[in-house]
Length: 115
Image (cartoon, rainbow, N blue to C red):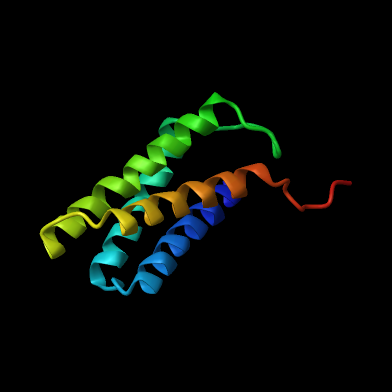
């Protein structure tokens, strides 16, 4: 479970980093990151993916799709409320960053020493 907490925090931090670099960092960024983090933990409770390190299975792909939707929808709502339209470049960057962070933290082997 500790690895899931770290993975969730890493994805939320990567989203905040993207928002900061895009110049759209603010209170809404923290709300979206917090909602995403909560959604990620609920997803793991409801739909856990338990593939071995270095391997992907269908649950990992489905999880990535769920995560893309869970960051994409609030980001779109936020942009529409603030800008009156969706800024697709920022939207794609946010979703891509979350999915990339998920896949890299899932794919690379755990570096704990095995005894």
